[in-house]
Image (tube, rainbow, N blue to C red; front, side, top):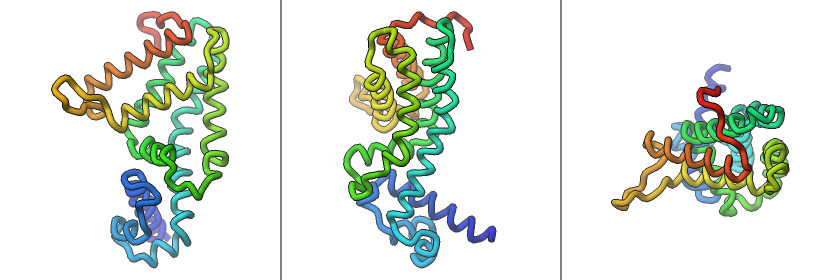
Length: 210
């Protein structure tokens, strides 16, 4: 039992790396088996099709986001006025820290934005949309008083964080610098705090607020 579970976990990890790097359309069961160090037959014994394996990978990516975001989204929705800026910053930080620790998560979704696995068209509706709707509802508690668009405010944050996590920025010397550079992450974090707080007309959190 334990060996079979370990084998399944290794297959999912290998598939996650490949789908994040090459996309669903650019990966094959044979590549997954090779990356996991198992026979193709072992992969298909666990997952009958590549589609089934992909759905499992994306489910886990969605769950990792939910684990970080759901509690922060609830805190954002219920925060009293004096805590809203800090709750927003906490939400941004949680999302950014997840993308830094698990860069495969934004990479998987970036491939979908570029129409990867377009034949699996209901994935967003079944997986991402409920979580996204919860985030938008939470942001709406801040956006509506400021006359801002909650949907596009939410996606501004998602697009920016995913883009930074995956590609960083070009420095003055033409070098690409991003999620693996602590100073650049600090600057980007501060920028996102400022960008969204000002867009939502929130005061700066009190010094020492946690």
